[in-house]
Image (tube, rainbow, N blue to C red):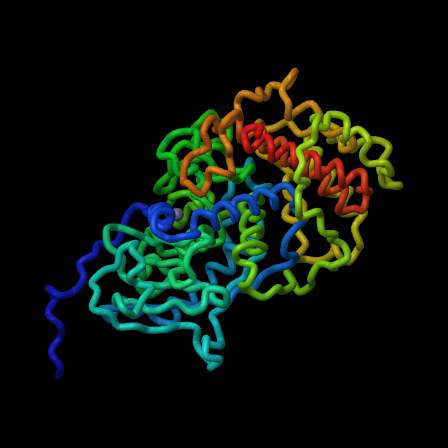
Length: 501
Ligand SMILES: [Zn+2]
């Protein structure tokens, strides 16, 4: 019999009891050390902003992403089983397609925002050399525990080299030190370090997976970062000025941990409070169950931007959206800013309303107009599109159903709130957004100066208005003048976000 390794050589890491993610620390390090990373982040944020303004841009249907799991182990236990790996892939596919069994636990106030990310995952079947593979690599290491320094991503430092990041999502599974559950690299970094790293005992739902992180949600969270999502509280400590740059997630102070009781109010976001059941908070696995529609828009923007090379377009629910239904909105904004604010432009739109538009508003119109808009729009869409089981109007027409109390939606579909963005009689004060170049300070890691809740409200208002144009465009109601007005509004929005420059 072979002698067992000396016990005092074994890693002595205690399984974490509180979530800790190293993504922002890695982000700060890459900003300091990787040439071009800052510029790539800037470009990525601007692209995400554009996608939020033109919700139909980007990939339609679902995207299927090949995954390689690099198991880096010192002990036999760390050499996790294929079953444990597959259990994690199953969780990703459930969570990113809103098929997770616990999505029903989302409180009613947030349920309409829970969204299908339209991203699917599969273990790679072909390796970079073109040979068949299980999608799992196994590397023995002498490293007791890795940190967030990317050593696990290179064979030279005891880890495993990345597979080409434009073809595979790299997931490293290993022992991590210091209570770290995992970390991700945002889009825009080096291919050699691209991917996510997960503590083996927070990976999958079986084998070494240990409560309270034994439901695979650490990987869901980190892959959310990999697709450009920020922490939902805005990474500003416990203040109210940070933002995750997603309009439909309430402004939130610090991270929530454990299993919070609903509602948890912070930053004046009552009555519903924090969306702590979001995958991008810090709660236990059992408590995080949803991505929001705005987060999906942002992830899809990443797939249309810096991650455009990866993944295969695939139908959602067995059918893809007809290509000719979705017309491409203008990708480039006008270079010259409008001389006057477009106060009068929306009044002219649309020139030709739908022929079968109801003469009388629905009975419950004032209560919940967005749902009615969606119904009406679906009525105007080709029948086979609306029947598509993978077609989710809440996703395809983002911007609907904002959290109640955050923004009072316009009362008429044909009458956008044209005076809303520019103060005057509006409760939204222009001064609230001055100087806080929201998306453009992202790459520096700085919070949105002067932002906070007023900025979130204004951003939401703008996106609502821009979504109106998107809906008109989707149903073919936007003519050339309408497109021009849409562009102009978008330009004004961008100018506002950039601090009036
Ligand atoms: Zn994180």
